Length: 107
Length: 120
Image (cartoon, rainbow over all chains, first blue to last red; front, side, top):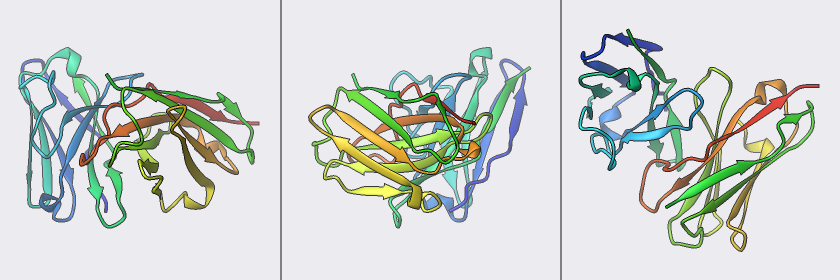
């Protein structure tokens, strides 16, 4: 299963950043989004398509429809600058698949 | 609080075997459904899942690397190991171990990562 993410997204502070994750009928999958800041390990920011772990700001939201899952960051801050990865779980082989990641630049 | 920490060599020569250890705390790998996975990341590149071991010693491997990987566990030491044979410079990267809770379809949390360079 292949997940396709655009390599980069750029937004100004206070604006909305939108990250897409394309996959065949991805709406049938459960999508997780990770944030990875430079030099750090990935951290879950959205799980089960649209749920947020405790401690993740409400500015982070997720959705999943048809062939595209989306992570949205509202009111972007400089501290949101990071790489964002989507991930689904392949039940047939019982393993995760990661997208190629999108780098967020805050202008 | 769940914490994982990777350890192993920082430099390995081509064709050698890489052995990494993940020491964890805050959960038991004997708890039904629990798992620990290994994921790597070449410099500047994307995450790549490698292997996963479950509470019952069931194991999963990346199809592309299956022939080179062995994952193991030592429940008495709260450790999970990963060996990779016949390493190549393309195996250079940061290797992470991460926790999978029963029923979850993601890894959380992750260890800090262990940077491994393959070079002669």
